[in-house]
Structures are given as C-alpha cells and as structure tokens.
Image (cartoon, rainbow, N blue to C red):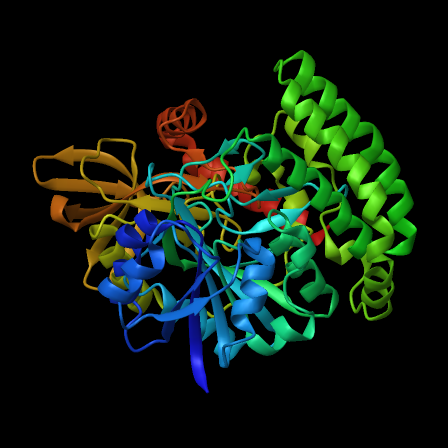
Length: 501
C-alpha cells in the first residue's frame, strides 16, 4: 500500500492541468503517487494527460459526478494510508508535503489538515476558499483565519502558528484514508459546496481533530467549480449549509438555530434583492430553502446515526458567538479582531523552551530570506509596555532604522536583545531597553531585525510600531528617561500587587 495518494479531480480543466500539474509533480517526487480523476471531461483533458504526463495515474469516471461523488468514486479505487484531495488550480511550493505528513504521522488524534492557502493572483493575500483554516459560528456560518465573509486579509505572518480548526479546505485537504472511510467520505448528495465542511464536522463529532499547518503553503486560483455571483453557487451554499446543520447539530440546538436561520436567510434574500438588485440570487435563496425542506427527510437516518456516535459536546463543535454580529454590528472584519472569543475555541498547544542562542540565529536566517517572524518575548527589559511570557514581537528585515525604533540586535556573540535605539553615531548604535537603566552598544551590522509590531495582552490584533499609539509611547517614554528609575519601581510594585491579588 502506498503511503500517500495525491488525487486531483478534473472536469474540463485542461488549461489548469497544463499550468499547475508540473509544480505538483516537481515538488511531490518520492512523497506519493499522483492521480487525476476525470469527471467525463469534453475538452481533451484525458488525451492531453496521456500524451504529456504518462506518469500520472488516470481514473476515468463515466459522467460528471461533481466534487463530492467524484472524489468518493475515485478514492474507492485507491489504496493508500493518506489521501490528499487537491484542486487542479493549485500551485504547490517546495516542501509543501513534508510538514503536513509529519504532523499527521506524529499526531494520531488528528484526522486531517490543510496548508496555508494563498491567492495565486495576489500572492501576498489569503485565498477565499480556506485561508489559514476554517471555523463555524454558532449559527452555522463558516469563516476562516484570514477571511471573514468577503473580507480577505493580506498574509503578514499573523496566522503562521499551527492551530486547531473546525474545517479544512477541500482545495487542498490531507486526510487519513481510514478516517475518510469511517465517516463515509464526502456526502455526494451535496454535489458541490459545503461538502468539505460537513465532512470535517462529522470527523470532529467522531472525536478526531483537524489542524492548519501554515509551514506548508500553496497558491489557489479559486472559483473553478462555479464563479462568484453565479446563482447556482448561491443556491448550493444555502441548501447544503442548512442540510449540514440538520445532520450535525445536537438535538438541543437544532430547533433554536434553524428558527434563527429561517429569519436570517430571508433577510439575506431581501437584502440581495433590494440593495444589490440581484433577482437571480434572491430566487436562489428561496429555492434553496424550499428544496432543503423537501429533501430533509432523506437525511433523517444520517442524522440519527451521527448523533448516536457523537463524542464531543455542543460547545466544542463550533464557536459560541455569531460572526454576523461581530462582522456587521461590531465591524470586526478580520479574524484576529475577534480577540478572546477566538481563544475560547482553541485547543491547548504544547510548548518547548529553546535557548535564544539556538533559536534566534534560525529566525534571523528566515528574516534575511524575506520572511516575517513572530517571536514570543522573554525577560523584563521592555517593561512597562511588553511583558515576559505574555507578548509577542513581529520581526522583519531591518533595511532602515532610526532613533526610537525597537530592534533585535546581537550585542555580543550569541547574545541578543530586543531594545530601543536611543542614539546613532555613524556606524555606532546605542540601545536601551524600556525596562532598563543601562545602555548597550553595537554596530549597524549587528542590527538583525526590526520590530514592525507587537501582539500584547493576549490580543489577536497587531499593534504596529509605526502607528500613532507606539509613536506616542516611544516619544513619551524617552522623554521621561530622567525619572525612569522611579516609574519602573512603581510599575514593579503594581505588577507584584496584581499577582498577589
């Protein structure tokens, strides 16, 4: 049995295969077998594959079964420890497979994972279909780290931490084959849209976990099945989402959630008609609700079986807040702005302390390659603004710097500090920690990174050092340098009092 089967589902995607299949083959050598399952394409995809890529395994289906049934039929013909469901419009990168495979190999309680999904057209931006991992709010609306409704964030390293997620994108989904079979695969009645969210929900109800592995990175074109604005896409999203809720919600939550959705779906329909003047989507939403009601009884047996085997509580299966309220009422358009509510739905992460002399040179190497690095802070030298073990610095390449900037510097061999610049004299730089009373010196070449911002007090929002708040902090604190000793003494007493209480 092969360890990994990479399966690309294709329907009239010859152009996409020609453009992106070479990257898959190039960066997957020795890692697994690549298959293309063809949904009865009429654009000469099969002839093209046979001529240009004879090393690729071909699985020919007799008609277009859609995403869900197409994959179920294809994977039934393959024996492997892991399945990787991959869209034909994905460009993979070097080393994309190893982090995900290694994670699942070492974490048997996780059934599936996804990489960080970025836009192929805007490479510094997340891609709508999955970004850095998906979640479900209390009313069944999906959103992602990096994408909430139609607001898609830029990738600035803010989600470069491994995280437990509620659902993984079907555009690039690595899953254990035995877990896939255990829950019955994708629900082929969905045809397309929401099928991977429903599938992942069923995995979690079985007690499995899912994760996003941002160390792995791929680029996605998106909109390959149905383009945005297509009424059929709207129809499938609403119908399948309601069906997913019916199948997976626990008994005590099913009726309250469905009652709220009855009103919210109608509100969405009238909003798209009146504000967007979109009659087609208006009709699609009402048709979706009508068809859901008609076929709901077909899923009664599925629901009974799923609920009888559930292993997690209702609170653990989804976020306990409304993303509609957060987005439209509170104007929180970024995942990071959800703050502590997001943290409530996070699983604990095991940590390991690594000496600065070991880890920081590795981080500096990444920074010099153009990466942005998030570094947890240790020590008290940047008090009162930054606290040991609580806050994090976001570091980037120090192309230019000036007095007042917070920088990472190597003041002695293998001794690093994150301090503020208080003076620059030619090639000599003088540094001082906000929580220190003494100075350190180094050369310009010893400045290894620039602190572009900080995550403070457990918040998910990045406070940038070029913003008004940090500019004001810097100016005031440096002006108060003559009385810093007394202010720090008061701060230490305050911290001691807080910890005692």
